[in-house]
Image 1 (cartoon, one colour):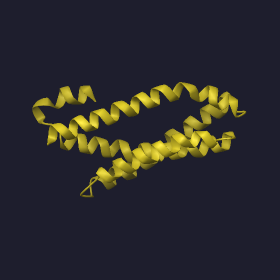
Image 2 (cartoon, rainbow, N blue to C red):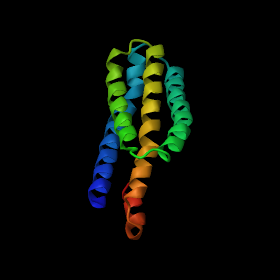
Image 3 (tube, rainbow, N blue to C red):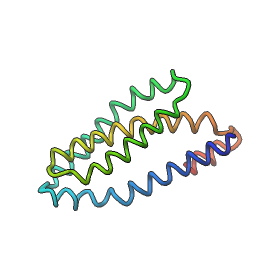
Amino acid sequence: MQDRIVRTLLIAATLGSIGEGMLGPMLSIFTQKIGGSPLDIAASWSVYLIVTGLFMVVVGYYTDRIEAPEWLLVLGYLLNALCTFGYIWVESPAHLLLVQAGLGIANALATPTWDVLFSRNTPNEQSGALWGAA
């Protein structure tokens, strides 16, 4: 059971990283197309990081107290997908800030929950190797 959970978590994280890696570099091009500047790129990234940081502390605290944190992980991944599709409707730098805030919340939901689930299901004798794979 643990092997399947760890494998599923690693596959999900890998797919998420591939998506971020493919879309992230295009943010500057996208921002220019909606009339944004390098300052707007920096602002949108700052909003993402601040929202992620603030919410991650709250979600991390909460994941320790609930029985089934899997739902927070699913909610985080779902919100990430929805916000990523939200780029389609972005027409101004202000819209971009909203999408980035949504992505920050999604990351804050998924990351500590993923870590909790991964930690709970990683056998001690494989801990280093599995965390290295992660």
